[in-house]
Image (tube, rainbow, N blue to C red; front, side, top):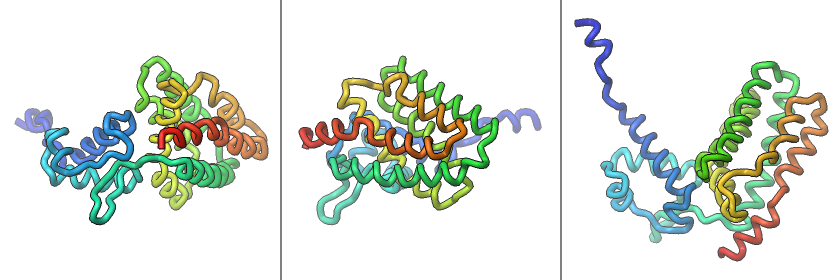
Length: 226
């Protein structure tokens, strides 16, 4: 009797369910299935995902906190549409955050950090074969997340989480702009090498260079799209 109780399937918690809905909504936005700038409603999304409005509302709140949707008074809720100004702001803020993160973590890097960064880089490279904007952009965000997670700086990690969703949308848009569904194979090789190297100064220079690569092409693409 006790064994049956242990093996009994537990019901999905509401919080978990709303997280699952948020994941599906995020994927639909990042992939372009729900177009940037399009208006969305609770009723349409509830029908689309086959869910009730309670957990859907929680999921939409989560996606709104990530900056992927925004509610405008008397207008409704729309999916974020990145502009060239958005891209510049994302890059300038991310450069500042990642610079601080590496300063915080530099003297505390260890073998565990190195193994995990290499594993996340390998996972990112594995998405080259998937032909999937969402998987590759998610893996790229996760790769860059490690330094924030290891920094032991709560506000810094919070700040990163606040822009990570928009960063993932940008990465997917960037790949589409260049006719790809994943980053180029050697895009993070130097970044990885320097992140595990001995020179903080070189790493900080690489952060700035890494952030700037391709930004003009992306701004031009978004300018045309607008």
